[in-house]
Image 1 (spheres, helix red, strand yellow):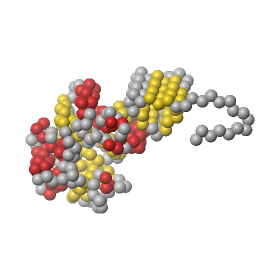
Image 2 (tube, rainbow, N blue to C red; image 1 turned 120 degrees about the vertical axis):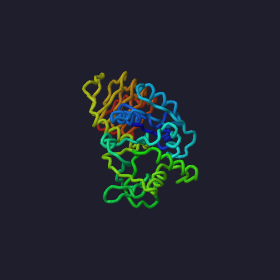
Image 3 (tube, rainbow, N blue to C red; image 1 turned 120 degrees about the horizontal axis):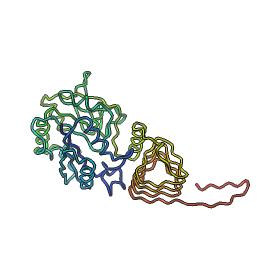
Image 4 (spheres, one colour; image 1 turned 90 degrees about the vertical axis):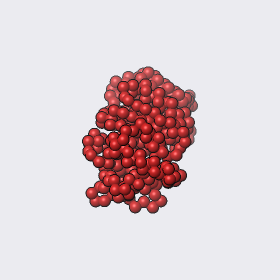
Amino acid sequence: MKAIIPVAGIGTRLRPHTHTQPKALIPIAGKPILAHITESLIDAGVNEFVFIIGYLGDKIEEYICKHYPKIKCSFVIQTTGKGVGHAIWLAKDLVKKNETLLVVFGDTITDFDLKKILQKPGNYLGVKAVEDPRMFGVAEVDKNGMIKRVIEKPAIPKSNLALVGIYKFNNSQELMDSLDENISKKRTTHNEITLTDALMRMIEKGIQFKSFNVDNWFDCGKKEILLETNSLLLKRINYNSKKYNFEHTIIIPPVFIGKGCKITNSIIGPNVSIGENAILNYGVIKDSIIGPFAQIEYAILEHSLIGNDAVLKGNKQSLNIGDSTEIDFG
């Protein structure tokens, strides 16, 4: 089974973090977004990967080759942001005709039984009901779950079922033919070659797609969603917080603390992920992600995202306060 993973986006909604590292490598619950995705695919039986890289793509290639040396993988460069459809089309020479193909977006974490979907014949699209589907590809389905129509970021959606970035194609050639047709005829939506338009071409040709629902879906393009995903995964992974023993420090699970961290005089948790070799002294941290090699002193952080190698030093106070005194530093 082969999977194509587009990770060429520049991650504008997560700046300034994506100025120095690709969005797919931002850590959540102890490892990058892309690691969660890659490992779930490996566990489901996927044995070959094609990564579509672009902005800071060398860092993605370095990470994958270092941490997953046993998988068969290829890297294709998308030099311009022409859309996900164009990105997948670039991998056409690495895809065998008529082979079953999985496409998984590299910034999306989902919760469903992937093995079950891969064992089923036919084409499948993952969907999730959302409050506002206007920012996503949208699927219209019949009572049997068959896809009738898909449309990219509709102004007036006729369905609340968003496409979650998980696509299984029974025949890769049919997908590549539709993408090739759209590219040759310059068919775009919102000035991009979209995968959704290719899906619609296939549906118009009589190719059937069945929908499947995912229990949880996190489109990790915003700080708030990253932190929410971090919290959920920490609870699910259930790291053993009892193994952490730092000087004058209280650990409130669930938390993940990477190797080599130096933490003193702090309160950590709940829902905190700290990368390796971070230094914390006199910190109170909750509901946050702290990147590797970050240094934090005299700070209270909540719902925060601190990047790799960042340094934060708060104010250290020494007070002598008399009776009936009120001080407000706010």
